[in-house]
Image 1 (cartoon, rainbow, N blue to C red):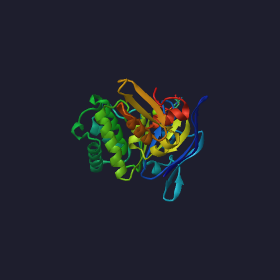
Image 2: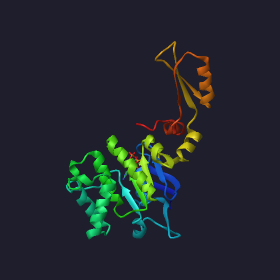
Image 3: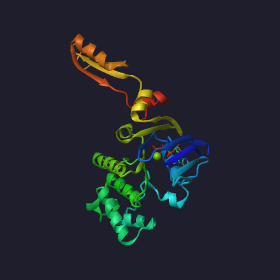
Length: 287
Ligand SMILES: Nc1ncnc2c1ncn2[C@@H]1O[C@H](COP(=O)(O)OP(=O)(O)OP(=O)(O)O)[C@@H](O)[C@H]1O
Ligand SMILES: [Mg+2]
């Protein structure tokens, strides 16, 4: 579908993307997970042909041939919802959509139908005639995404789609991702929120300082790099005090603790992608 081969991008002395190789599979939701400055947006810009790599290449597989994203006809297969919102505050939602439809060469009745469909998909139909500037952060993000979907791309790249978004709009965005996937669209989902990667993505690439640290399903990543689970016990003798111990196989340990008696509460905390990142880098994913 789309492949990155040893991709490298420098800004002066800073190497933002440092030899990144990976291949997207058709129809998957692929997460790019990394902290601020990891090189996610730079990678996305090269994926869609907005930035030229210094080294390496981006290859789009289409019609049994390899293409560069610089080619207009393969670029039309891509839709980007950029991290910095690309919508016009002074235009209404429907005007924004019709403007972008025109850029894609979609006009007349077709432009209106597609704009209406995009509004429906993103839950903005009843706000069609309101100017974007009165929209909440979440509504702006949804409109930003709607603009990227008008030309029915086969690969949609969403860069931090939940930045500045309220919980309701976040859930709406998750639903849109699932709808796109059900339609066979491949999605690249860029985020520094591990919960979103865990919830949505079929596979995740963990990136830091422009490098790929690990790639796989969430389950694979946690198994390989998450470390042990934690058994958290609270004893009747010391209410409010939680005793934590790392355990490789928590179920028998828990059973033993219960058999011993005197427990007030017990939980098993499985490792998360946060542990994966911590174990791979020695740092937390969060700022
Ligand atoms: N046009 C540019 N000129 C100079 N430096 C840049 C430019 N674009 C990005 N950088 C630098 O490259 C590094 C990677 O930036 P990038 O925006 O790709 O990271 P990111 O993973 O998207 O981060 P965030 O989570 O904050 O969006 C950062 O150190 C950034 O400051
Ligand atoms: Mg970014």
